[in-house]
Image (cartoon, rainbow, N blue to C red):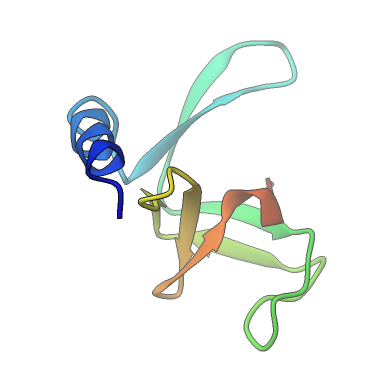
Length: 85
């Protein structure tokens, strides 16, 4: 594990929250969504996640490799597997 990445994450979470996410809406405005918020799966991740189904995000986390994940049902999934609904 990269100590530099760990320090970056610690500093980042001083200014952002694992219980919300910033998004740009279709009008170009930045909005904050608070957990839980709904996402649509765009991939199958057997046995828990199915394409085309909606899920509620409990938390937003970051891996030590600096990849963002949504925590759904206690498990982390890369945010690229979902669209915000």
